[in-house]
Length: 310
Image (cartoon, rainbow, N blue to C red):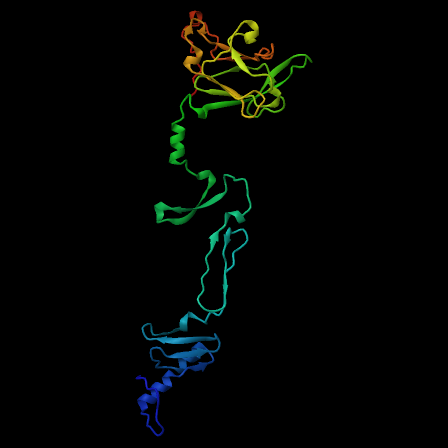
């Protein structure tokens, strides 16, 4: 139908024009079925209203069907909210005009939890066009960087440092202070006079920062009770830092072939080290650090005496 803006009084309208005007009117029917029954020859774009669905319909000549006008009723208000525990924030509300709402993931708004192996994570699967999928913590693969780091661990690196905490207390006699050693899950005062086997390739770090160590620096000697028994401090691959009893103070020994010295028929030059305090006798007690098991090559053949850390 050609658009005509104004008709003059007395102007005649022919049948074709009148029919087009009739078709362009919006009629209301009791139902969609009544609508389709009444309008038997609709034209493309014709609009009608169905009272039962409260919807406007448009005749689509391409599909030969009545379709919802604009997909349904007009939207007059929109509210986007974020569910509690979803980790999302940034919801918005609008009643008219252009509407934009930006949602963000806010991890600081979530509660903390200790992760379990059955817990799930959301990932983008790069092997499946970045489709969103879930994975459990138990199924997490070892990263290339982590695997490289694991493969790169070798004897003698700082990652193989074994830590000990040292404290000083009376040995129960009421007259003799001694060194007590703690490691791992040890608790309380620790153990006095322990016998420990040290392995090649490890560093053993003794933390002497506890205030009870004040005035009692820890040292090692190949002679029991060290300088109090005409011995001397052992210094090969030994590192000392700070003052005993002060924050950060420690003494560390790295066990290497150089530390152990030249092999002999019964072991090595340095088989055992004894902890002692240069200021007070008897503080090492009967404690000892064995660098080399006591093997007699002359009678026991080719026994392997080195404890190699792999």
